[in-house]
Image (cartoon, rainbow, N blue to C red; front, side, top):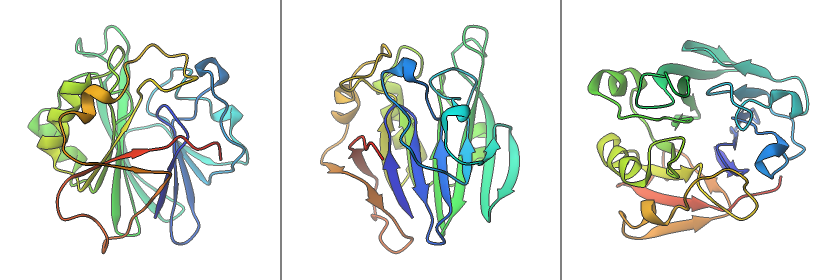
Length: 212
């Protein structure tokens, strides 16, 4: 599986069979434009403009927004209900975590998670190989909370998202405070991952934002 990052919470996964999955496409209010790609599947964690701009995506993808188990284009997707804040959704509403399984790899997209996950939710999410986790705070868990969650969930790879980079109009912090919790950090333009090349221990990978 190949994993690219288009900025904010938008990732582009391509399976060995060529099936393409996009997560949380954003609108131009973020300061970015969704690249001109045509995914087969789009997941949407919640209905905010910087995560749900499905209408700006090319093609006619299958859109997954709900909790529960879904099988789309041969990909298994589990949606888990969480909240966008620490007040059980009273401030910012609901958030859905998606655990996406393909090619023997489980990629978990946390969306705009805004609170600590207890044992029941972690069990519902299940094992995770690659964790896509917000670290910029303001609207989500902050850097310290994200680092603690990575250490609790123990994914083989953790990729930060939803943090400040040049051109982003969303008021979030940079990734630095998250990265300082870890030793060596790998920096890549994209990630190629298979069951055979997963690192033995948790590795943090900082992806470059790609235009397409």
